[in-house]
Length: 455
Image 1 (cartoon, rainbow, N blue to C red):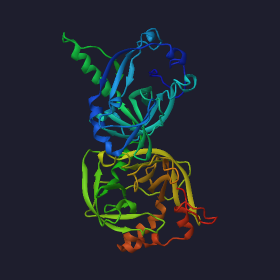
Image 2 (image 1 turned 60 degrees about the horizontal axis):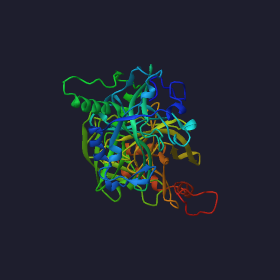
Image 3 (image 1 turned 180 degrees about the vertical axis):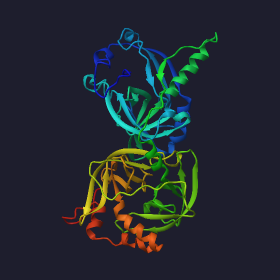
Image 4 (image 1 turned 120 degrees about the horizontal axis):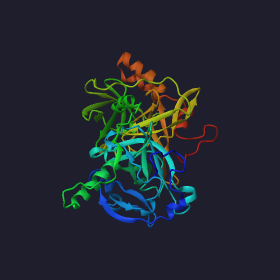
């Protein structure tokens, strides 16, 4: 592993490719991490058709008990005994101190067996997208990790350096026919505890076996945590039968979402997972939904009672291409877990008649995130409502990092009008749009003869 002085570049603190290739290792122990194993088997259902990369077999569908992902190895590298790193304490952070939205760095070696001079100890950056299991044994991050990074470290940066938070288990490749593009990580503190339990079990004399002394276990500061906590609480899980999606609470009684999340339903089950750990369960009525031929895929749900426990987000009045944004929604694991967070930038603002009508972001968006909010990272202002990611109908491939949202500036005047008259007809303007705007949302070139889009 790199030293605790890890920096996001190749440096003298990391073993050189030549030394790494020339150092034999002895297998000391193969072990499971029970907390990780439990939550993995809860979240990864065979019916979801998960696929992971395998160098030997290409892509392999995960079975009910994917043993290759649930076991870890402890190696002894005697050739490193005289290394400058020998004797230095490994600094770690306990996973129960991590928070969604916290920045992470991964250090691993994709394709290093092919060309170590290029790929050894490369760096990727992302955020904590989700946490699950006892003591947050499972960590999900949107840091881009490629095949070959399995076993690499994931770190949290503090003022005095980097702290190891977990080990990469696998880049998440495919779920059914949808590309995921996130990374699955196991908590290193849970792994160390599993090793200690095993080693102490072998000790007949009742003495504690020293293993991997650590410094730290610090509750690291996360400046944006309070803001993100408020935003997470404002995201709802909407369920209609076996179909679910996301929504954002924009008043004590109203939730914005997408029409396709609700289908033809007139009522919807609403769940809100609060950061305190409690879960609110309510029923909502579909107050308004756009017509199927409308350019805007929007619906408004009215709750059966006022929701006073959640602070509604502020609404943005403008957009800046390139600004940092985040998307929160119930994609990937859906109702089996709380909402996930992915980070990116506002990559494009599409306008018609000088008015924003579509937003694009680079955040990873998956099935189940439709209807979820796009927030401005530095202020928490609501920018838009996620409609979809992109799918190439010709190739059958999805692109989670290319997605489209409705600007909140389109919806805000209508919401204000409804607040005055309390009549759902205030939203009818969403069904009356120009042919040019309709062509934009059909991904058609408005300057040429109309033809069916591949997206």
